[in-house]
Image (cartoon, rainbow, N blue to C red; front, side, top):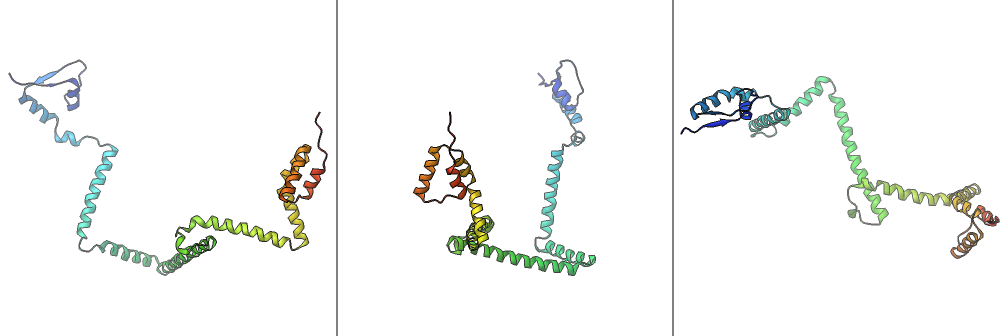
Amino acid sequence: MIPLCGHTIKDVQHIGYGRCIAPLVWFFSPHWHSKLVSHFISPTLIMSHVLTVKEKEHWKDRIGRRIDKQIDSLCVDDPAFMDGVRGAARKRALASLGIGKLQDRLERIQRQEKSLEARKRLTQRQLVATLRRVPLSEVPPETWRFESDIASTVAKRQLVHEDELLAETQRGREVLNLSLEKENLLDTVWLATSPKQIKDLWEKIDELLGGPQTKLQREALAIEPVVED
C-alpha cells in the first residue's frame, strides 16, 4: 500500500492550495506531495511574507549589532581611533562656526563651577558635622538630604534670638506680648466660653506648672460662666 499524506481544509488554506467552503480532505502520494510542497512553499512565497513592526525592529537591531561588531573589529588595534576622530571633528566644527574662543571660555567657567560645587558640598558636610557634633568622616557625601535639616535648625535658633532682641526694646516687648496672645488665642476663646469647672482646673494647672497667663486669658477667666437651664 502506498502511504498517503492528508491535508485538511485548514492546511490547504495555509500552504496556498486555495480556498474551500466544504469539508474536504485531499490525499496525495509521496511523489506528488513533494512536488506540490516544493511548488507552493517556495522561497519566493516565504520572502514575500509581510513583516510585522516587531519583526522589522528585531532584524534592524540584529543587523545593526553585526555592523557595530564589524566597526569594532576595524578599530581593535587602536581603541581610541573613533574618540580621536570625534574630538578633532568637534574642534573643526567650533573653528568653522567661529565660536572656538567662546566655547573655551564657557568650558573654563564650567570647570570653575564644578570646583565650587565640590567646595560647597564639603562646606555643607562640615555644617552637618558641626550641628550634630560628630566627626566629618561620619557625614555621608550626599549632603543634599541635609539641606532642609540645616535650614530648619538655623530657623529655630533664629526665633530664639529674635525673642531676645525684641525683649531689649519697649516696642519689641509689645510685639512679643501680642505674638504670645495670638499663639494662645484658641485657649483664650475656650476659657471665655467654658463652665466654671474648666476655669478652675485651668488656674490650678497654671499654679502647678508655673505657666504665666496672658492678659486676655486672665480676662477670659474673669468672665462669669453661662449658667445652663
